[in-house]
Length: 268
Image (cartoon, rainbow, N blue to C red; front, side, top):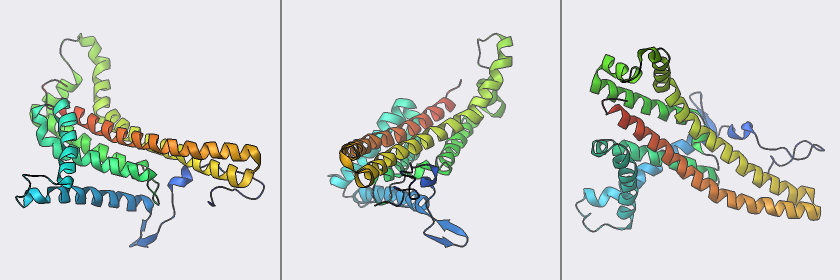
């Protein structure tokens, strides 16, 4: 029985909360605490790298004309990002960004899916530092591309003063556009992913711990029936959460592609 299921004697069930996202460290190295989120992020990075390395080995060796199952899986996964995100969103000019977008998508997806994989059961992206770091990278790329294409002043002029608008409107529009591109975009990109992973994991833990408490501690017909429903609900929620986890990886990557594509056109 989980230690989180029961509070102090007589206090009953203690629901999960933010403390569940702060697991104790496994060990400390040079003052750095190595805990579950760090392990999840590192493991996700290694798994994505190993998968694509193994999938491309036959091609690198010149034996990829007839793809094996692993190569086919890697090409299908990469092709999904290339066709559904890169080409659809940016166009042919987006082909050079597909390696970045594919890395972004699968890194986020694997980190998200760790939220339903025992014994980890904690999405790495539920820690705001990871989505924030990814959002800052996307922010740096699309602003760099925009400045490179139009020049520093040309980029900000196109951003803040779109043509065809009466000049008094610029008094309100210009600071809004500046804030949108330099503050709101990376923050919303970060928070959308973080809060979805945080909330989904919290609800799933609530179903599991609540069902465990009702079955083992509450007792009686009501406890057994309600606990059984909660445990069954946790199974359903697990599949639903997996869908949300993949969807959020897609949404984050799609928005990154939209921002990059917007920086490559003359007017953003």
